[in-house]
Image 1 (cartoon, helix red, strand yellow):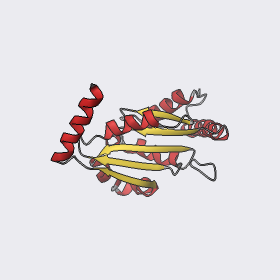
Image 2 (cartoon, one colour):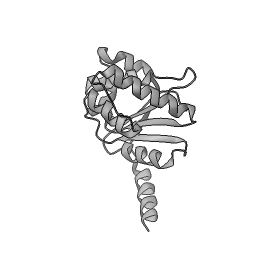
Image 3 (cartoon, one colour):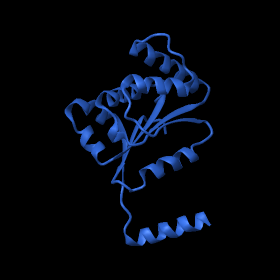
Length: 168
């Protein structure tokens, strides 16, 4: 919906990665998705990954210049009717500095809508990490938070039946 930052947490094996991949498959055609399956990236590595995905070439080593070029590309995409979504799997493994960069990127907006929708998928440790004092500004940016519950016994049977049917 263009609100900014969404957090999805759950226990190991609850289906967060499957949910992320299903989201990737079902996004509307006007959405450009950037998927980070392994977010243990430094701030600079994250900026370089975004640049690669957005087809941007950096001409400066300065982080602010890099963020500005990313913002310009996001503005151009917004003007063209495109929406960009960053999906981060295993977000609990992201270094604190990179999480702070996520916060900075979540600030980019058109005046009406966020230029970069960010969805963090992580284990329950992500909630603990976001409770740390130095990450309070990022915690405040979370627009929606979802906890993926584990299946109960009946749901496991239904899930297996559904998967077996899908597999043929």
